[in-house]
Length: 114
Length: 115
View (spheres, each protein chain N blue to C red):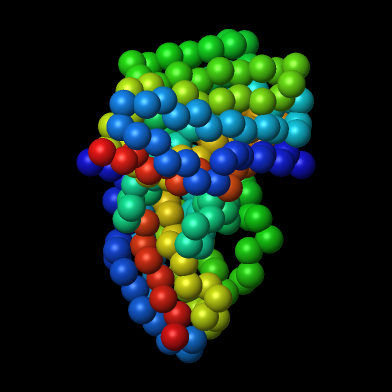
């Protein structure tokens, strides 16, 4: 089955700097790659996702890149703010025929220091 | 605000108790999920309901019993739990019945402590 590795497990950045979180996946048939943010005491919330027919997607300060050949995808947060502090999970799944549930990475705890 | 509502937010139960967790969504979603999350770990899938029918059971022990009375409601019945079952239980929903094809909307979770 699918296996998703996520690095780093913890990340501290100064406010205003950029943060990058990287994930690799094992199943080349996976075609959907969401990123979830989980704040303390809350459930995970989708912040951005990308499908395998796209190499990059951007939404304001957040961007995700996908390299299908290398089977890795990354989350980029620019101009970080204290409210970006949370745990971020990447995930992968296979949609369409023979679809599979999301497999999550182990998470990255991001701390933005003011 | 989350559009998936879970009750109770906190539950403490003994190993011989029977209790239930409840989840409700009114977004017209046709797939609903139960996840278990231990501290500092990612969510682990337990069950998936698609059009009110159980479509995935990730080899969950029978002391956890899911129920989907209608398309808006999802229950998780708990009986004879063990202390290691203490965790945050997350409910989620998605628009389409096929898993892996779109955004999961999570509730805020029910934190369960088994004494």
